[in-house]
Length: 79
Image (cartoon, rainbow, N blue to C red; front, side, top):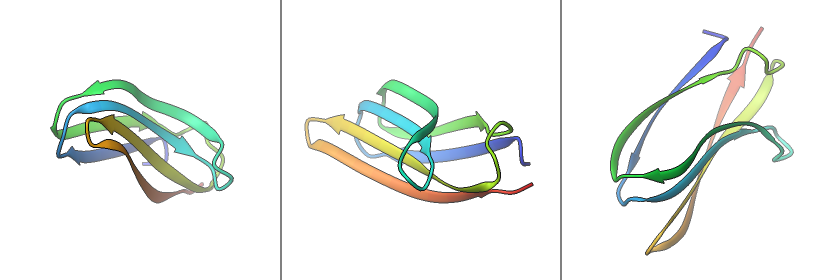
């Protein structure tokens, strides 16, 4: 649905995570989660109805004893 994005992510290690939706310029549009996440599978939902149509990226930054890791994934909001 246009009004929601459902995300499933797997973390191999626990740590402080920041998960956000950014535009193509890297500017934050929505903060989905900030805080500690255990290792394992996580299901998150985001309300995207206020985002204009376009291309966005989901950016995850995870900091733990292994250092800082990044994951970026693209998605499209349509009318």
